[in-house]
Amino acid sequence: MMKVNEIFYSLQGEGYHAGTAAVFVRLSGCNLHCPFCDTQHESGTEMTDEEIVEAVKPYPARLVVITGGEPSLQLTKSLVNALHDIDKMVAVETNGTHRLPGNVDWITLSPKDGYVDGAEVVLRIVDEIKVVFDGEHEPSMYPGIMCTHAYFIQPCDTGDPVRNKAITEAAIEYIKKDPRWKLSLQIHKILNIR
Image (cartoon, rainbow, N blue to C red; front, side):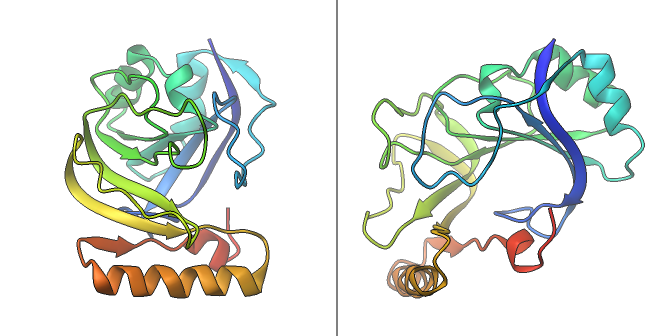
């Protein structure tokens, strides 16, 4: 059983798969308390692997994004296998502080160690790194982690349009100086979709 906050169908709004149709399985709870967290993820319903798969099945997208909160606290190999059995690609968005089942297809590491004490990253191989950028902290390339696809800077959404604009402009300038990074905008917020 896993505590599931919500399951919904939308477009991936961030990172490498931005714009791709996806089923989101948001698991409840997190081990960190980031000051900029924009997700209500504490409440939820206990669900079995089979119940989660049945809730995902009606949607035609192949991509399933397991998110949270922090999905590594609950995600099991058996759920990933069950989603594979219905021909889904399983992506996980994680802060990287806990190990993941080895059968996950795509790992998005969004490390928070620059913002929260005790957020040490334990993962060593990921598909993409997506760093929240506040215009003040220098983003790390995480040289001890093998990233197979891309490094993203994502401007922090502070809720203040003036501050957000300044942060986005600073992110653009940072990327122009260090083009190893790419810009990740939260397009679901721009489009006002889930």
